Amino acid sequence: MSARIIPFDYQGQVVAFNADGWINATEAAARFGKRPVDWLRLGDTHDYLEAMASALGLEGKVSQNHFGLTRTSRGGKAPGTWLHPKLAVRFAQWLDTRFAVWCDLQIDSLLRGEGKPWASARREAAIGYRALCDALAINCETQGRTPQRHHFINEARLINEVVVGTFTGRNRDQLSCGELELVTLAELRDTVLIGIGLSFAERKANLLGYVRGLQTKQLGGKAA
Image (cartoon, rainbow, N blue to C red; front, top):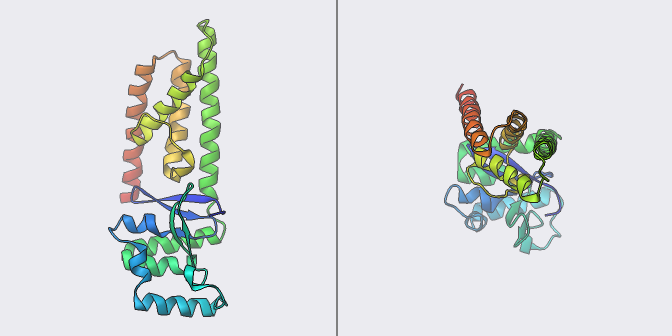
C-alpha cells in the first residue's frame, strides 16, 4: 500500500485504514473470528463486486484483484487483504452491525480530509519526546555524567510501558490517536519528574498512576 496507514481505535483495538479510505480487511475480520476470503467467495459478494465495478467503470480490470477493488500485501508494514472504501461498509456489515456503522463514520471523515487529528497527535508525541530527551540530557549533565544512547531508549520504553503495558520499543505509527495523546501527556509529566530529580523507579510509579487515571477518565467519557 502506497498511501499512509492510519490506525483508528475501535473499542480499544486498532483497525487500520489508509489515507484513501481503504480498510485492512484481514486485520478487521480477525477481531470477529472471520476471514475476508470467505466473504469474497459469497455469491452475493460476487454480484455486488460486479455491480460496483460497473458503476465505477472498472469492468476492464482483471478479476484477480476483484476489478481493482481489493489489494493484497504479503509483507511490509501493512500485510493483509485491503478493501476499497466502497466495499468496506458492506464487508463490515458481514462482521458486525455496530462495527459497520463505526467504519462508515471513519471512512467518511477520512475522505473529507478529517483524518488529520491522528497526524497532529503523532506530531505532538514526537515533540514531547524531544522535550523529554532534552530534560534527560540536562539532568545527566548537571550530575557530571554524559548522556548515553541507552538512557534515551530506556526512557522511551518507560513511556511505552505505562501507556501500552510493555517495556519495549514500539512503532508509534501503529498507535491510535488516543494512545498517542496518552504518550504525549506521559512524556510531558516525565519531563517534569526528571526536572525535580525523581529516580527512574519513582518516575515509573508516578507515571503508572497518572496514566491509569487518564485512562479511567477516557473510559468514563466514552460511557457517558
